Image (cartoon, helix red, strand yellow):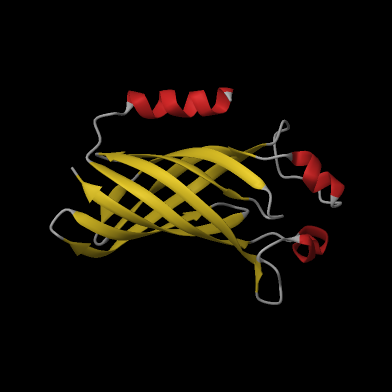
Length: 167
């Protein structure tokens, strides 16, 4: 509950948004597969098990270079997780690119029960540090858009789709 209150506080501080977004999807490709743990992953797509569907749902606010996001979904073993990110991006042609930081929270004991060492700082806190790359795929009604979001970290690559509206 204290994490949820922290998220709400973070977003209320950034109330002057230039655009709002609803995020859906969540394809996650695991770059690292120690001890073939991908065999134990849930929602696998393909034989290797490294690509999974995480069912992410989220909400984001963008203002100038900053984007703040909150999300819920499933982790690699199909268990509930929630988190938040902040990115600072620059426009490069049709893309926006820049660093991203954040975290998500999960129940580490469920990983341990499956024989997987969780990638977390403890207490189920998993860091998100990497690059945020996005591209508007479609713009309509002058202020509404569909955007492809890609987060690249040393451990995973995650893709989602956002439906947004410029204010």
